[in-house]
Image (cartoon, rainbow over all chains, first blue to last red; front, side, top):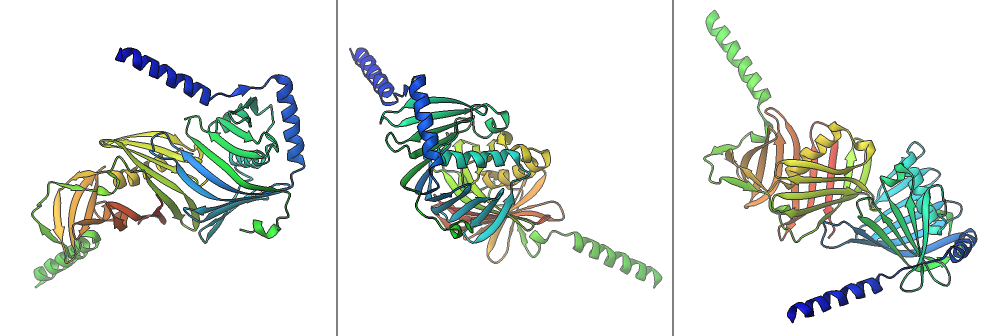
Length: 212
Length: 207
């Protein structure tokens, strides 16, 4: 009897976990439609300002490493990640360079000679805007998640990128198509997850924000 | 007289030679009979703690930052991972007893000389238990001498608390590790300083 009870419990748990993780794959025409809408929205987005919380997941740790701050984006490719908690650190991508302000210690890195990092950077810019639909670089798959938001996975085809990040997962809001979450999954399955909150699109952002 | 002069010269030359070759670490220390068989580093030995540090590296005039993550995953087994603030892995090492495994390292850093230098630093940092070869003292400290990878390591204790490890060759100091702001067996500030080239690693505990 206890055995039976256990089997029942296990199958119930299995069933629950399947339903919880349920992601419905979109058919081709729905996928095509949502792709077009996201690209349209992305081209009409000139600025983004948003709070973010970042979770770094490493399989051997008890807890994810959590940090948070603010993101600023401005067309064509100005981007600033401003970490505030638990440390002050900000990085601006501008003109093929990384400008870093590490709690007052400033430095910059020229990316023009670093192809892999440059392409990763341009992907990050694209992912923030949601426009990553490069079929030469990625296998793209479209889902609806449990909250009916769109979950789109971009699996890297290029070996150089694969060694950093095997897969990007982006979640788009079901109605306004804002990017709600970016998940960058390494080939080891460890990942970085960035969740956006209080996102504001197309509000004026001064260029001086990107002086780091 | 001549013989005396020669003897004097030899002695003084020898003493200058000996003096210049003597290790600064043990200067003015009084050698004692060891009271302990082993010396311990208690700062990374709790399996239930994720040791997360914000790292600032200064190499000559260049500055780099990132997160240093240390986790004791089993008895005598540590994982040491360095990532950017953004989360990208720079390297991922594993120390198992005296063995060492590279789980991941960025292509650009994947050179034997870099890996060996990093390995030596972090092995010294996380090694928990070390056999005491000699013991010294001065006014403030009890110092235990131990050996690892053919290098001598001196563990400086102040009020029975480990405050500094100095790695040396026979003649020169190579690396010093300082432990500061210690609460509940966590060193909230750690500095790793290289003496033979200009590199300093500053670690601030953020967890």
